[in-house]
Image (cartoon, rainbow, N blue to C red; front, side):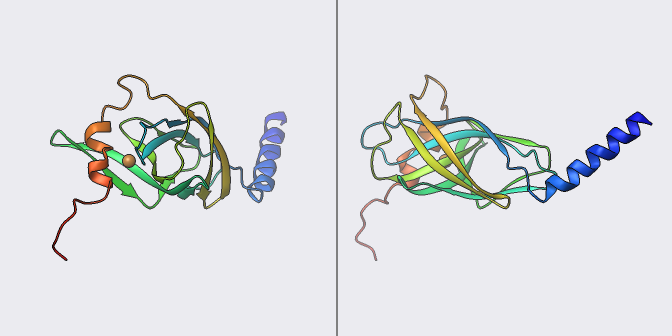
Length: 166
Ligand SMILES: [Cu+2]
């Protein structure tokens, strides 16, 4: 009987909490410091959907960066490229790791350099509400961005070559 009471209690608790929507737990946040002159860099974090409902991350924004996209690094036929996602879906109770060589936030059109050791305030937009993040800007470690040259280069993202054709 005691177990049953406990279960009943937990169920009741679960029901009452669903109205408040448990915001996802965010950890392992970091933004890669970028070389001088570069206007793009990547950011990583782990999103744990502790709610009982599907979490949909619909984007991110920051006052310090013109544009933040959600990318996924993919390697097909030995060629690294990035796919842009409009949404990241995380099932109830699941965790999505945004990490090197996989999903990441792409900070684009950086106006003021993101200084190593500083903190970038980013707002993560989700179907469960906005989440304010304080992401530390860190030095990219050796070999931590294997796809940087081919996947994150400005070649893909920067302005196209000047052309006379219109
Ligand atoms: Cu990217």
